[in-house]
Image 1 (cartoon, helix red, strand yellow):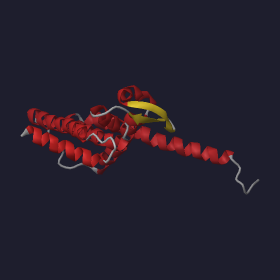
Image 2 (spheres, rainbow, N blue to C red):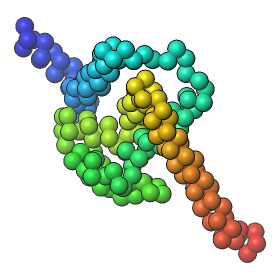
Image 3 (cartoon, rainbow, N blue to C red):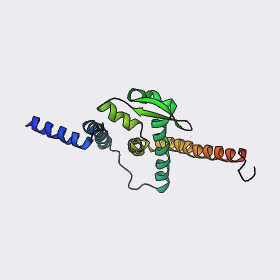
Image 4 (cartoon, rainbow, N blue to C red):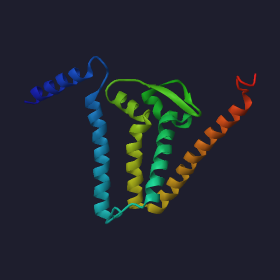
Length: 177
């Protein structure tokens, strides 16, 4: 019975892949880790009596969104965090100011983790979940970390805006020439 089930799953995986490397089984493992972490956090909350807030104030949601954005990009693109991605990726160049472009390498779980750790949109789910858990177990520290990462996000936008403004004042327009 197990062999029939396994062969059916493998057949479906090959049909889905369409010749590309899409490790569906490995994606399921990664999802299992995420689901297990959430289940563990829920169990910890039950054991400790920690409860989710009844409502989330708009300012907390804003802070959570900004800090999730910044931390997700730090994890997936920052040169300083590249040693954590290196087992799953290969350096391929620079993708923007202070951000790297990396190619996923390996097969199976290694490939699935490589896709996860190079995708800020994918990592954002994990970061936001950790932030939400922080709001349950340690809201003060979580808000401080959130405020710090939000300040970095705002600073990034200001740095990019400043650089663009400086560049526009250095280059004479074609009309002036």
